[in-house]
Image 1 (cartoon, rainbow, N blue to C red):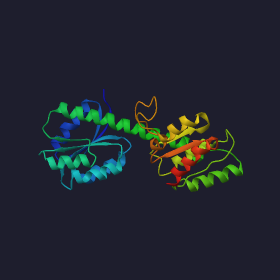
Image 2 (cartoon, rainbow, N blue to C red; image 1 turned 45 degrees about the vertical axis):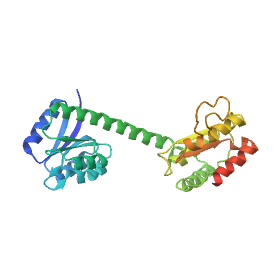
Image 3 (cartoon, helix red, strand yellow; image 1 turned 30 degrees about the vertical axis):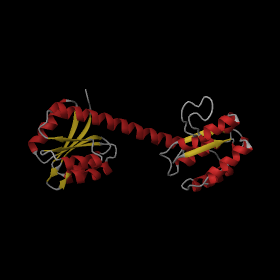
Length: 264
């Protein structure tokens, strides 16, 4: 049986009562509100619980489409479906552009509403799992996760934290096992690029020719066995971070090509 919390904002008492009963029968907890002001107040109190918001388009104190961004701000992972007594294509298009999950006409069957709500709940739960996972990953690779009494480590962390918000190329030096990739991960997750890919490659693990293809990619037919275009790691990491481990092991000619890429 479904469960989850739904915020229902509608100024029609009878409709609120009917929808609350229908959704309650399906196992949902319904929080009713008669207008935008009380809807926002209720959402503020229960933002962590609300998975789906059903909101009337024409409320006494607001227009549902204009209310959408405010609802999204308070509950970013909640899915919002707008309800209207009069189907309006322009409102429907604007609602979807503003991030609404769906746009339904009042009077449609309860079955259709329940299907939409079920899909919205599933999407909201998935989004929350993704958000929680991103938080755990960020914590795992944060500077706070680096524990040690060494003054050298503290100095290195402070320098890395200063450079993380910038777009500068960073050279990490240290012997194998000293935590260079851990530092690279922490810099990435503390940077504005955190939502983009982090791509790591061990330069000493590839022959020269293969590493060049991995870094820069190739076009179909450029050599025997190139059956399709292949993105290079630079392109895969676009907007994010490319960590080149053991960069000192690169062939000198490949180092020159890499320098040209970094300079441009």
